[in-house]
Length: 79
Image (cartoon, rainbow, N blue to C red; front, top):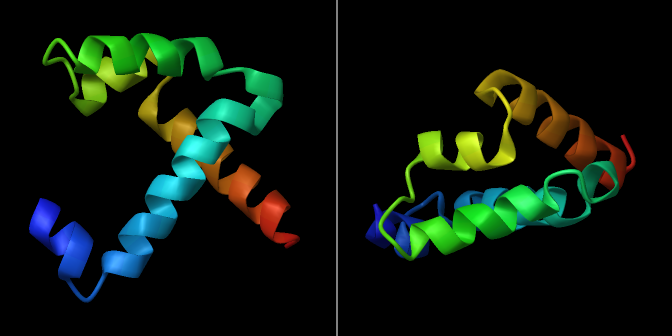
């Protein structure tokens, strides 16, 4: 929930996840997902903000997105 995101014990983790996901979608893979992210953001203003809408806009399977995102974070973190 939004309340847990801002004030819960996991708030910092949620913020870090959000930050790294957005960074990945904008910069990862040489901007591979940038256009899809813009499409998703436009659709979210029309009420289509579910994960399924994100995956469709990015044209990617959830497992692949998570693997690429994790690899990006590990690379940026220097691990």
